[in-house]
Image (tube, rainbow, N blue to C red; front, side, top):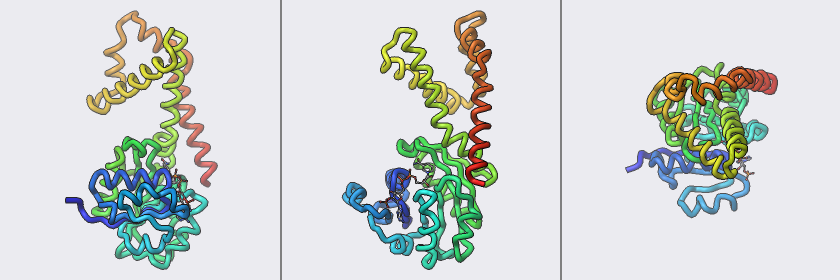
Length: 269
Ligand SMILES: NC(=O)c1ccc[n+]([C@@H]2O[C@H](COP(=O)([O-])OP(=O)(O)OC[C@H]3O[C@@H](n4cnc5c(N)ncnc54)[C@H](OP(=O)(O)O)[C@@H]3O)[C@@H](O)[C@H]2O)c1
């Protein structure tokens, strides 16, 4: 029997739909207890068939809910908050913002009342329930944080952090998807040069990346422990690895993360 949660998802686009499906799939709420809003309702026809409530009225969605997910684009946020402000009740609602780069104090500037706010930074792997979602909180009770953590655990892994680390988390986890994918593309290109067809090279690179990550996730080892297992003295792995390091692999990754972090600080200041 699913726990009863009434949930509003304001802005049911890519992320909002992934959250709705993840929560319903994990049976943390029933579709009939979830209120999904957007302006173009025809794009939610499939979800309506699955018994989710789909509506264009944000106020009605908030009035029906306890947990209110904000999943609109950053520029749409001020208008949405202005609209739902009159019906937000700190005794009833928990506000969960997934909006990239918008800090809790900025959200609070748009609110007429002090209320529980949780800011969550998922990544695009929410679509396949493999997100790394970092969260920070203000005015939320332990139970409320636990509950919201459970929602995001239906979409992958979670970590509660201080808000001052949210930009770093955005770089490492959200931009990080692109960084890891670029490695896979480079490995694919190398594989083609070594004689594989493109699809074969990509399949080998993808599964090898998955295997490498799983060795750490499941074995809880340091990367270097697993690397030591592959590097035979004077062998081909250490030759390749050292050449990559001579060319600046680790340095390039760290510098790339720093450049990304510098940029995010400039964009959101
Ligand atoms: N996608 C991800 O994996 C991901 C990861 C981390 C963070 N985020 C953040 O999550 C937010 C949403 O991202 P997304 O990729 O899901 O974008 P998206 O697909 O563009 O979704 C935004 C949705 O908001 C709806 N919307 C716009 N104005 C609205 C209003 N006034 N009332 C109700 N709904 C409204 C839009 O639909 P209509 O035009 O039909 O209204 C659209 O479906 C962004 O702020 C992004 O930074 C996304």
